[in-house]
Image 1 (cartoon, rainbow, N blue to C red):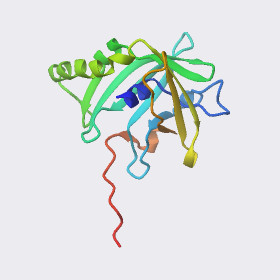
Image 2: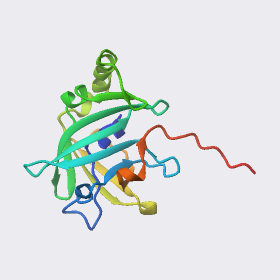
Image 3: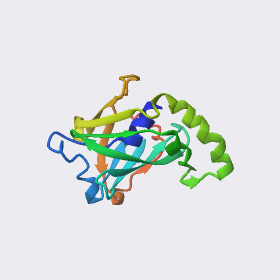
Length: 182
């Protein structure tokens, strides 16, 4: 669930973009977390829209199940601080989120039964500031370095790349890869 939290609040930066880590978002790019380039899938996709006060509205579409096409879409506010993108996960953002199965919104009664369970699993990080930096990684990807107010729990690294909507990436479980035939 920590990867879900990071995806909900993160944006990329590199050594050359420290002061403006969301510059590519202004050009229509989105963040694809844990990309599978062959299948054009991501574990989550984050988009950003500048607000009138200079902060950013982060819309995160996050895979909730690694075996089923179940996603949660949330909207939260983030800001850039010292080259990192920082924000808070709030229970209200999760409870107002949109659950989807295969891209279709779940009926409100089904979502109302599931959203509190998702919120409960994330309660340990609610209302704590999470700041994420992205560093150059292998194969032209970026690697997350996220910190959470208070230092616990530890947040695992993720691989990230900027993508355009026209690139065709979607949030979906990674396909099972099989060994090539000999």
